[in-house]
Image (cartoon, rainbow, N blue to C red; front, side, top):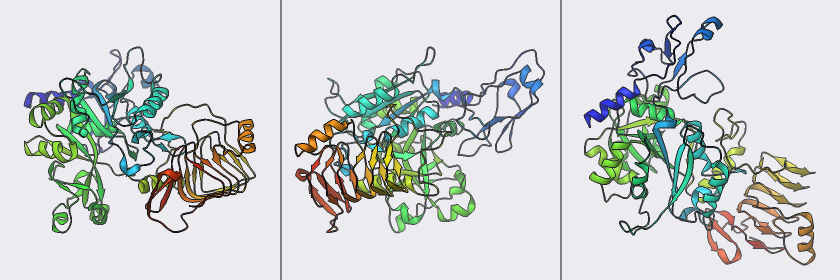
Length: 527
């Protein structure tokens, strides 16, 4: 293991600097924390001064004459539209890192949104799906080899990924892909995935074929934006076997998460699952060690695991095949076990917006959070790190005498003489005149019904896709392809907190009404 660790240190210490042999000595490269890359000419540099948020490397601005004479290339190129800063990662993530996105279980807490689709395929933010978040983070971090593991209702997920990313990942010289790996039975293992670690173990033979240094293990149901290059860089600099993304939090929130305790160098020494009382107090840490400023560290004195890991290839093989061949879960078994057998498990601070989309309430709040002003909880408008999705080539949305405030409207919608307030309206939505949509999430439709089809349905007593005339929808989620008749009220008038009315086309969880995909609510129906 010592030889393996030494090799990783040597690889991480190299800079990808291309120099013209005929030019004079180059000016120094400097880190954002002020330290020098004094050995740039020799191809070596030390990262020991960088923080546990990841160092950044930037070339000093030089006169045009020097820039013509020699070229400095730091690989990979950082995604930014402000300062010309680069993450110093060698070998680059595109050639040395494999992304593994875990699709999660059956998604029972998100039911009925997961009735006909896998959890990562659930629509998000009018135009997207949950899986677009980790895939986009990978692409923006130059990780081009991505597997998505799932075993429940994977048809729509497979279709979305093949349409969105199959033609855009690879190149003549650089291999790139996004592939779904569904659970399968084999003579060696007749069981389905038993957990996150078991899912990776069952496909470890395939992952080993990739000539990479690390695996980045990601969840398919989280909403956040992260540059994994910095994450990987810290993993290499600290010579770790495993690096765990950690979220700082206060005492009130800490009881709902799995917490970690670290030493003075940020190394994880203890885990505790949702501790309370004295056990919670014992998990307090000095978060300034990970880069949090002293003022915020006083309130944010706990760190929670985000369920996101960088694991060295050799360490992964050793853990899953030799040390813990029967372990099913990373968070509760493999990672704590790694600390117990002496492996180096490092914490990496992520100080930004992050939400686990695990329940109906969390999903509802995360979607409506993008309408918040002046700054949404999560922004899809960041051009430096965009969120990608399937190109559908839909027309612009059309609004005819509509009153729309504090809302997000997807592509290809037709909205007529209605009132929409603090809502998210998904693509291809059709909202008829007189409707009132408030604090609601409409997912839209997978296809259009043209005007002639709608008129034919109405003339025969049928109900077209979309929201009918004079409907009132408040604090609700309407899944795709739902047919809501005229004068329907979805307002939870009796303030019911929990109800399962699948035969009637809806569920209520946490007081939020969810209309099932493809449901039909007749004219005058009241919830």
